[in-house]
Length: 319
Ligand SMILES: O=C(O)CCC(=O)C(=O)O
Ligand SMILES: [Fe+2]
Image (cartoon, protein in one colour):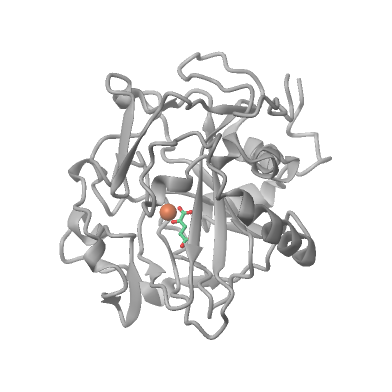
């Protein structure tokens, strides 16, 4: 077994970084690829997204945000990224030795697109009101830890991430209420003078206090170069700036979301085997979590050992 306290090789976080995660919330940017290397990868890989012959959710509706969920199941480049030690070791420092990746998502922003509105995710059920993640009784942490990877440069002009430090321990939203989906809202609303929205949802609908306004005076913007990534708890208040359109390059981010193996994923969807989200739905027939480190002693989730193309996922620290 690996002794995390003494193992300073690899990419484990220092005690100071772990402390910063628990106080400030976000960590990074860290390097995953060089800037030019990432841009070259993305020029090639973005074309592969169009081939959906082995995509895990062939039934996902085109244009909906779920369309490119979990493409780490069929695109080799992405399958290799979810298990990269630069991500996994750092996740182990925060989540313990047994870690699963439960979801990956693309967040594209094209010139003129609104920024992502402020939000927090604990159960990830904000859209349909049904929890996607269930932590064991009495857990002191909820949500997931996200590695947010910039596939293109993310600047204040093209839509970098923003955080309100230290907000990760208080949920300002009640995800059990569920939100209404309406694409008519997209690109129309300003929040504190900034064009922001959430892919057709309005997080104000599920604010615990309808009069509360996120305190943007405390917000920090965190630009990333292509190939860099940030780590943050999904319960931290986070948002992104609009893409102002001064550059024609889209801002593309890809997120890998991790939890310990003790967390049960999509348990409430097991009867129907269908997830409804972002104006669409997909069947969980091909779904499984990816064990990226350690062992699964809980057996709460279906684990996928191989991609849709049959390639094994590499467990970084098998124990
Ligand atoms: O990239 C963005 O604009 C938002 C990302 C986000 O909300 C997330 O990774 O949870
Ligand atoms: Fe988010």
